[in-house]
Length: 110
Image 1: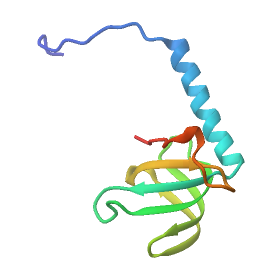
Image 2: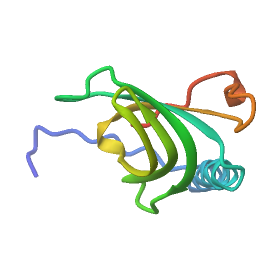
Image 3: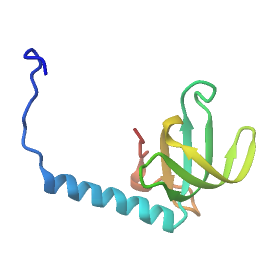
Image 4: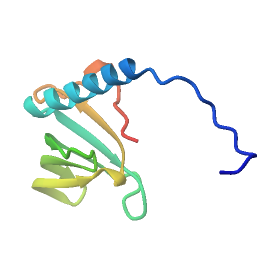
């Protein structure tokens, strides 16, 4: 390790991190159980700016992929699709009936 590299050694709030993780996983679980409506916006080569929507069925445990039912894309509708989250700029989660977003905003996926 270089002597020029300075690393801040702030104490990690393990309890706070654990609480945030539990809250996040709870939101994912509830969204999948209720088959929440989702709107996706893609980024990257070949999909920049493409928007799609469908119903969230599952989230892969490593958060690499989601499973979406009735995925509507500009080129057609897929009954079920695995979506690689590396290609997704953001996911907007809403209720399955009205399509209104939860918490009044967008939930961004890194």
